[in-house]
Image (tube, rainbow over all chains, first blue to last red; front, side):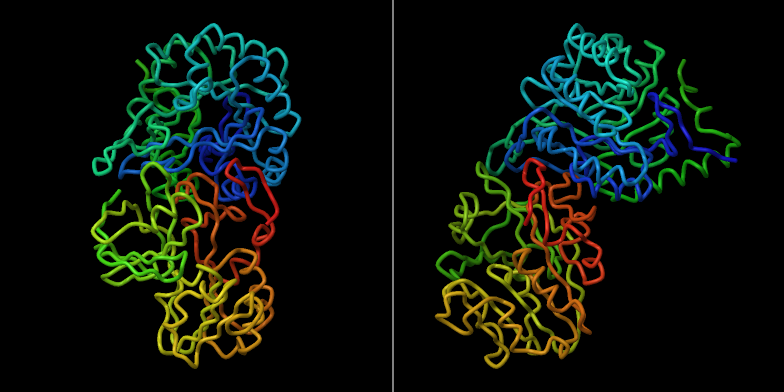
Length: 300
Length: 247
């Protein structure tokens, strides 16, 4: 019997295909639909302590094989997110609450509320590349990262995932700093920009944004591979996964599950079910009983 | 991102201007584009003309739409798209119901067999009314200075919805919901074009979602069957921050 069932980051997933944070995950009904239509789990939009509108548009610069976005961490604030989680939980599948903050205390407050709301794990946004004081500015400080993870692990009953940035000199150093987490999520978007030559100005209102999509798959793979060699911890791969072959590359580099975001721009919500089906066919054809057997097989 | 020159311009009402341009893309009635006003923002706009010559009809209500409406012939507009699912075509007699600037996205459907219910607050804001045959034109104004005094529903009392092979509706969501409720138990076919605040336009950001469907890619056009199960339709939506509010 072929199986895609995966144990990763302290959770058991029916499918290793997870919705990445920031995409179609601020409305509870949308998260529920994505789960109902085949995702193994969803990660919510990153939620902070206060309501934020995010940046004025343009917030995206889409091109054929990539997307640059600077949404600006829009979120209703943790207190108003309870209702959305409640709606999404009706799917019966795992919800992972993504949170962002600038210090350990706020991370802890947010994580405890998420736990109280009934999420299965929290994902720490240590990697958003376009908002001052948050995300990668926190995640590039190994001492702070270590403190945040240690405190959350010591207090929470649910698993803690750390989503890391590729915009650092050494991914291994940050991976070590967050190695008390239940999983590393690699990678967030790559800091980038676009310029419109007619109006002679940056396209994104925020100037800088995060690059995602096909273009960043090789960077994500490299980070997963390096982290796999560095520490013995579950890794969830993300960055440019559009089909089962992309997913397999991440798995063979050492990821035990993977997240999908920008591919929705091309394939829509059905991408989760399609990739799962193609993975099953691949396993069957290659006489592999469980996808777990392929994790890290390419690591030398 | 494409840059297209405005070929002609028509001021339709004191606050509404139509910008005409030639653009090679194939666009169908009901689809929309994202128009960028550099420095001010990006605005989703449905096309009010979809042949070789295309048109956007801009209502100036904010800074970015105000600047866009002031675009002159020979100047460039910057856009991406087209996006979204179009209206499904229908033969026979059709009914077009447009509230406010909603008539802009219905305009490409106007033909000799279309009846229009055109509703606005004041006579000056009645949009594209003159493009309907005089005997197939039902004008409704809230101030009652032209046509019927009242709202869209009052205009609908002038026709039997079951006489039409298809009803097309566009306007503010509360109006759409009122029209939907009025015809939902009748033997009619109808398509509604939803307006929700959009950020990305490409099905990623979740700003415009209704019960898990993205208005920008699954819509903006939805039929009666799709709307039947949408508990968020006409009741709640998310603000720019993602905070849920009542409509």
